Length: 183
Image 1 (cartoon, rainbow, N blue to C red):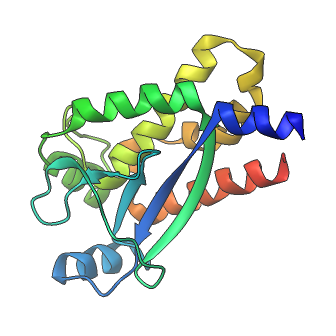
Image 2: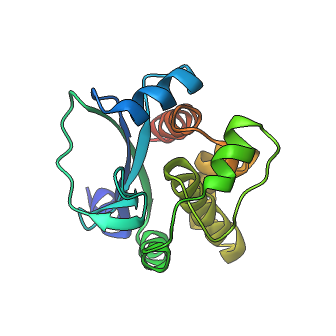
């Protein structure tokens, strides 16, 4: 019992959610192009806000969203509190940045890998956040992070700009599965 209390105080759960609701023309276009049920992703922060590019304005922001099970698929990832806090502070710095059209066109459509490193689209931003968490834990060299590093290893196989919402969904499901197996 005491071990469970210690674990609860040192970790936070974040959610990566994927939009599967009816959406608009842009959602339908993304789904058709990626051959998937998902057209958008959001990073569910530990403070209850979501971080990604707004689906209308395409500007990176924090927002309080209503997430219904009918319209969103939710994946949960547990990370050390200190890593989540650093990651969430970093997300604030992304706020206000504009959409990475170059990345969409030259990484998603033409698959040339070109993108703007200071601009974001939803899955690129969310994958970048998970990759950042992985790098923070690796650099720390703390042995208590080892199973989190192992769980996040699948995100390291890809560049964030290469991932569509569906690609990210498959990776996050794998991370979720690794974490469930290690409990």
